[in-house]
Length: 197
Image (cartoon, rainbow, N blue to C red):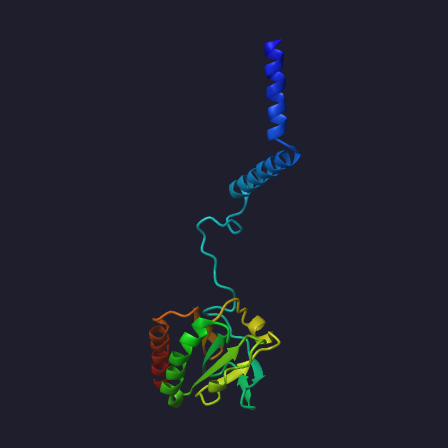
């Protein structure tokens, strides 16, 4: 009788500890674990996560740059036809890295103004307008309130910068880092040198 009472108590404790919601949760966890193990074991390497480094979203380096025409903040029109050399930056007024990148971008635009290199900044936010101090800058300023340019260039985070030479993307910079200006300047100097010969 003592053994039967112990078994009944154990069964009651088991049922109490593993109530219906807990049982369902355990079943779901086991299923998810089995599916993920199967996926990692039998899935194709292109879709796994593992240690693969996935490419940046297109357009990217060595790809054609999408052409566009857009209205500038000052009322003019900016024609990005692909011919020539362009530095195109996507920014947001809501982003600290954009504010950090602007002085360098301004400096580069002034330094290369006489070398047939066009600079342009596209503000991706439709929430706030382009900052007033962007009115007197040596580059075109546009606001992409509709998101058309942002989608065309597949901008997922800002700042994102493209260096385009004769319709081909030569360099893409994602985010803002202190060494960005140096590496961009090196590429611009290379293009200027190429054009001079």
